[in-house]
Amino acid sequence: MECTGETFITKADVDPMVHKAFTRKLSDLYAPGANLRDPLVSPLYGDLKGLPPLLIQVGDRETLLDDSRRIAERARQAGVDVTLEIEPGQVHVFQIFAARLDEGRAAIVRMGDFIRKHTHG
Image (cartoon, rainbow, N blue to C red; front, side):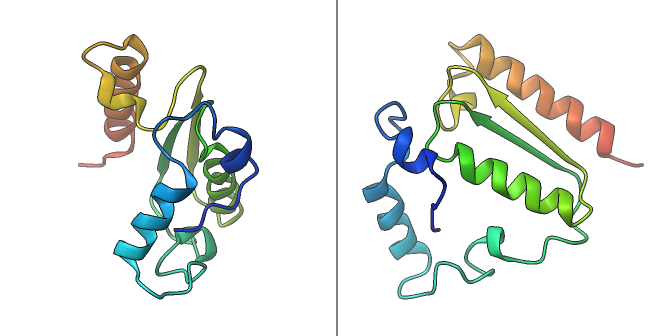
C-alpha cells in the first residue's frame, strides 16, 4: 500500500495508528518487492467500475484521510454508489473502540444500516 495523500504527512502527529514506518512494514509483508501502484496491490490505481456500493468510514485525524477521499472520488467517477463518512476527532479504525467510544458504536450501527439498505433478498 502506498499512501500518497497530504494527510499522510499533516496528520502524522495526531494519528497514533498509521504512520510511515508501519505502512512500509505492512507493504513489505503484503507485497514484497511489488510496485505499490499496481492495481492488484492498491485499488486506488485500479478500475473501480462495477464495484458494489461502498461505505468508507474514516476519522478526520487519520493519516489515511486524503487517500479515503481519493478512493471515494475515483469510485464515484467510475459510477459506484459511495458513502464517505468522515468522523470528527477520530483516528484510524476508531470503530474497534466501540466498547468505550460512542462514535465507534454509532459507526457500527451505520454499517449495519448501510448493509441492510444495500442487501437485496
